[in-house]
Image (tube, rainbow, N blue to C red):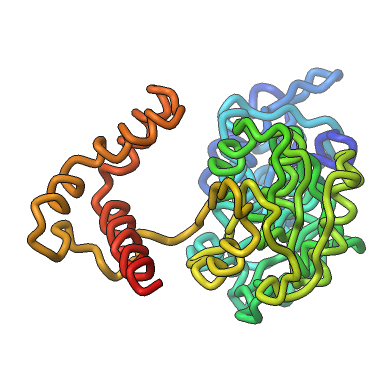
Length: 401
């Protein structure tokens, strides 16, 4: 466990002569009092200190050690101000370290440790600078209520942070407002650095998605120099910033209707030095007064961005068209049938041989490497089904024009 500044927290130890060390160790292990996270230490006067769990060793155990376990032994308590982690502790995962520290503290408070409490500890979390965001499914047992707020200080020290918050269910309010409560600390603003980009936001009002890192890295590598981009669901700048900072987009129109996200987005544009290349459009993007400007449109909304497709087409350049980056939970797409409807031999040929479509794209300037990547993606059955259905819908729309 660590204090602020990275120094290890003091631990309680029982001190005796070297010849009694093994007897003491066996007794403490049997009573589940030995602190295995820290090493047994030799003191300057030649005695040996055995770290124990809790903030003190109950008097009954001290009497047992001197009267029955090792008669005639010296038995005193001390504090190790700079305890040395044991070899085993150095190999512990953060979750295991958290369990050891919380258990030691809980038992020191006189509360019996149980399998229920251990199962109620978090196994994963999100870290934003010095704030740790816990998941909603931990610390739910009633016993924890009587241990607050000191419990949160113990958890924070064990994991090396200064602030703690706990996530609830995301509100279905259209802005995906997270139900987050602050457990330890005063400020709700956090900073997260991702691929060299700084994001600051109010953790109780805005979400930060770690799951889209692959896509953020991909768009950051795109050659967008000189291009104008419209980001229809900008949030705090998840994709707006990679397009500006790394991909070199000339200008981005960022659309967002969550006022808290807009505040964060404006700050993040300034933090990353790109505020002069972005205009924020606050409000419902379906009412966007913008058209015929975009080389690319980013539709970063899941589970479906389909509602934004009409406005995306509206903002594309009429003379040259452009690229739509469509986000969709394709795995949940209802039409997962591997064989498309219809009996056209041409349809079957294109369905079974997606490389024919890719060949046409290669002729329009794509590299052979990008073609191979596109082929690999197109071979996923669920993606094929989704792409085929959209192709059919597009053909139908064209025929009605």
